[in-house]
Length: 637
Ligand code: WT7
Image (cartoon, rainbow, N blue to C red; front, side):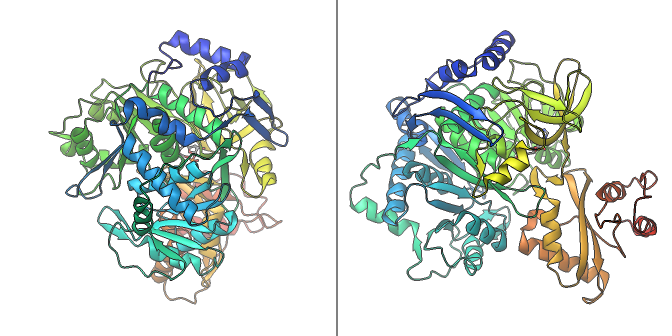
């Protein structure tokens, strides 16, 4: 498979971008012609951002799994589709060729169907990073069920919220997951979640860690038992369901500025075309290369650049179960050495945490197979960028800094490896089809360069968010109503004299902790569940490794013992309600919170204090009780 739409020079990039803006229908229609359709489209694009309504390739029919698997069988049947490296380096690796992946996805699609899953049903997947997670995702897509993958670090309460929101009656999980030295009992977390989700009819359990589980008769079934039934029938192929271009492919929950996560919905055709296009162009993928994206499939990066982008391009995708520091901080480099990895796509937080171990873990590791490095998830500081460039890329590998979001489905702003220029800490230029603009607070476009503004996008790209599940109005108000006729990203950005973009971070109440999005309101809600808490306010502060840390100001009613005890208790509560990723890094007990006369908490002030800018708090005259600020400053930790 070659990629006729792979951009090969800076001139080609500029020409492609221009064409994509002048005639998006022709531009994307030509690219889409490289995929396998059951029926061609009648119209490439129809949109308005008012409702919003975004429709790509309307009238077309397809199944994304035929594009990700079946169409590679004639020439890549024996090429690895997925290489799996286990958490424990002494356990056996697994390789699934395209032929084997085809077999397993077909088998599991039968299992889903035999257990009553139909097109349009929502299937929740809560698993560790094992090949069966990718198989489950693809099997859902094959039968037209809408998958909703929940990251294995979320708590029972978070799962229950998502199950209720999506009304998922079907769950796929494992007994447990290995993450570094830990063994996480996923099935038992599901059991806890299901106490408040009586509508769940079936739970399929894959045995991985051999952690004891309790299986409920009539509800819980074993993955392997179900597969055996299909084998007994001789493993018949599963004809891929015919999907309309705009049928939903998946839901992925993400945090916003309110307390309740949003179910971001992506649809089949546009998402397929755009993740493939960006995968092929960002990384300049060459057939047979090994692509290692270190994200978890529980996040959008894993959906788009472990599963759908690489597989639709017939690539070899390396999937790693563990964490970068287990059994030691050389693990990524061991994996690159072992499999001769060509592309490494990881997060700044991982780079920073590995930097802290010095150069020892890199010594004697052969990294010469690397051709391209990538980063995603948060702004990368120059120090980390330079370390990555010098010590991992040995000065020979272009670094792509890819800016995008759960809602955008694929990369929107990034350099293309070796093709368009890189600049440390800049995502640089928009992808073909992407029209970023900066606006001021009032929504006026800022046209000059060397300016900062709120980052918006003018027109749809194929994997634009289509809706927030079950609540289209929420999608409109969140993304399309702040500024008229624009998609608002929630990020601020600086544009330099060359038109390169540097993302400066969120401008809303969303934190980015180790590349994970966490809403301050969600953390506050969780903290407030504790009966010792009167009120709380959560803000972010700069953190050397995580990018942002979570700082909680809490009014304590004194009923739960001393300060240390209540802090521990609050941390445990957040872990239980949301998951360990949302645990506050700092908890300061305060006598009051800075509020305006109308009762609104002035987070600006709290942010300054959390950042340690005690001298430079700004105007406090509109506060109900300005003296509270002094108290908080004095108690700063
Ligand atoms: C937010 C989206 C997209 C996959 C991972 C996160 C921040 C993402 C970059 C980057 C600076 C970045 C933004 C964005 N972000 N990539 N290259 N440089 N910031 O997905 O959880 O939806 O978070 O991550 O703030 O809005 P997500």
